[in-house]
Every structure is written in structure tokens, then in C-alpha cells.
Picture 1 (cartoon, rainbow, N blue to C red):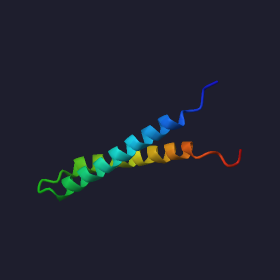
Picture 2: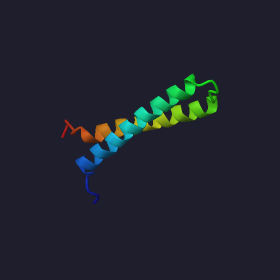
Picture 3: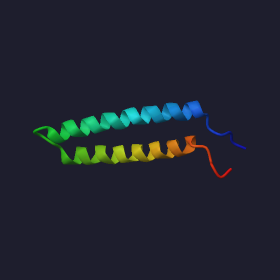
Picture 4: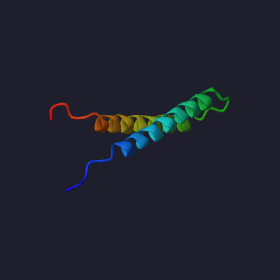
Length: 69
């Protein structure tokens, strides 16, 4: 039987993802406003940002106690 994930570990992962999400947001903004905006690179960064947002939502749900229990 597997052990439930450690709350501190999940919180640390969530913080790392939030930092990466913010950094990607800044990178996308800089790239979009540059003279040589690379649309493919911007699209890839946006997809990565969405994946990170999904992972953050997943971790946030894991941290919320099950109210039905």
C-alpha cells in the first residue's frame, strides 16, 4: 500500500511550479515584445505554461483535505 504524499513535499513542488510559471510568463512577455518575435517559441512556452498550470491545480487539489471523508 502506498503512503500518502508528504504535505511539505507537495507544497515545495507547488512553490517551484509557481516560480517557473511566473518566469515563463515573463519570458513570453519579453519574447512577444521583441523585434524578432519567434511565434513557434512563444507557442511552445505557452504550452509549457499551461502544463505547469495544470500540475499546480493537481497539487493544490491534493493539498485540500477531502471534505466527504
